[in-house]
Image (cartoon, rainbow, N blue to C red; front, side, top):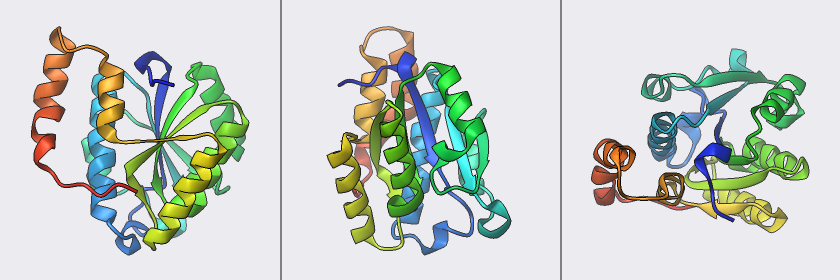
Length: 191
């Protein structure tokens, strides 16, 4: 199954200020989520961010907030974002059936949200470079469990190029200049 820009939504789960410092590779999670969010916004793809109990975990990290121009924020108390009725209704109303999923913590909120989205009939894509937990093994187990349930593990490049579909025209040239060109030189950790 391929990802299509007109069917996709990028969902960033709980990339929050008091949570990120304890994550392995937290900096990469932020950097990759911001990069993917920039590509999504440039292509007109909705970017949604959840915040789990922000009174305790803080709000979305400032680096991500400043990198995005028009994300939609959702406060949640369930670990599974889809269990929040306003979120589930709004997602259904978008008509978008492909959810590119990233965030923290992989084995709790990202996993539970992904499983619920699959149960609700959405296609779920695990954005491998932009998912984190306190322990790397938790990320590996969460990814494995979600993939076994029907999700697909993908890289940010896979997502960007599938959304673009072709290399001619102004859209590709803009995205290539702004996002893709410098990316080939950065080392990444895939989870």
